[in-house]
Image (tube, rainbow, N blue to C red; front, side):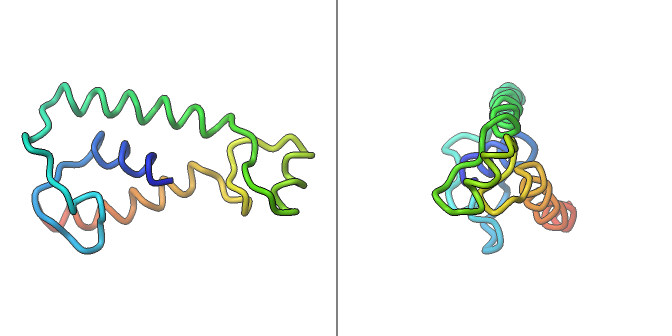
Length: 101
């Protein structure tokens, strides 16, 4: 999840100041990201998103094994959709970015 959070943050948001709610703001890039860098991050994010949507359930729990037997793809070991987790994270970021405008 950390990698997908990183790509989502750097594809669609800019770091202007450190906030305790968002760990991706703890380290600033040495140079501000330009439009091309955001575009590359966006491409990586959507590529990763496609992989997460098609990956089988990871984990050694009984619930994960049951989901694998049903050929369920795109969910975490606890049964949550990857897209749902990323939308939750984006919704956490939006109030922060709007308040900084």
